[in-house]
View 1: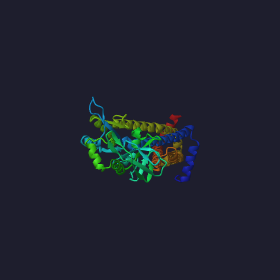
View 2: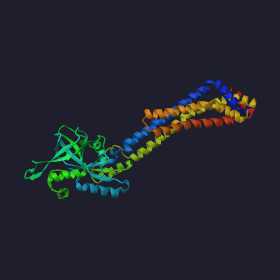
View 3: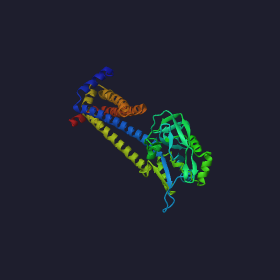
View 4: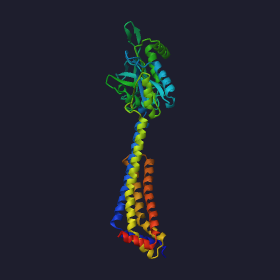
Length: 414
């Protein structure tokens, strides 16, 4: 009859009712430990998410801007030219081919072009395939991109430039319609890396167009095909403009950014990049990761060591009760089950509470994705379950002791 589940549950309730204050303290310690682990996990995941957003997936920190090249100690740096992009790409392919770095031109027309809003636009563009520099998926031919505009469409009045003995002048404008106007985020890579593209005033603003539109504007302004303009510039002819604003180098792997910057600097290029203040980034990240892992491990061990010691202490104090149950005919397995039933409900409540807390807090307080909350809730529940399993195993070993040994140990504890 001793195998009747009702009798075992009744015995467990009796043990729970007479449990000393230390058992209740152990239960409270368990709840605090589980809450600490869950909160620490949520916070750590939030930090990882922020680091990924700010560094790993943030295009701006993967980009190096090359604005000029130093020719010698006695000469001023010269602005980047058409041939520099190809030269930079060759340098990186030869020196650090595994980095997969790619060089793009950022173009400019450094004279103001009046638009239908009455403002002077400093027209800019990027190479085909470099839309990510503007934080865009693509750059459309019929669209103007700017950091601020209330218009839905724009007309650019492109000046027709002619050379005179005193330089260049224009008294004719060719209208060029752009049927759409879309915003550029001020957090886009080019906006982040250079304040010049964020400069906006009532008299002028940066305005980006597609590469084909940029070429079309130059052809209309100088009255010749784009290829002819480029050949003339390469021969040294002065058109009164510097078409290339800078060369943007994109590096896929964050840990290669510093090395690419050092290579370009060694070839006398002057660079600017968001990670310029962080040298030896890879080593720093590895050290930080090891320290973080060690801290989390120590915290988890210290957090769960308290409840484990508290429950072990309660198990030692319960040896007399276990011996009495053995004396009344319960088997060692039944006695172990009774003791496990004594704390099973509390562990289930703790696991459920921590899972619910992790899901709610992770979603609404830490703003984590649902799958991250589900993983952390499972980990918190698993840690509570693991502690319950270890304690149940200790109870089975204790209940299997000989009855005289149980009673003797109980007398020693008293």
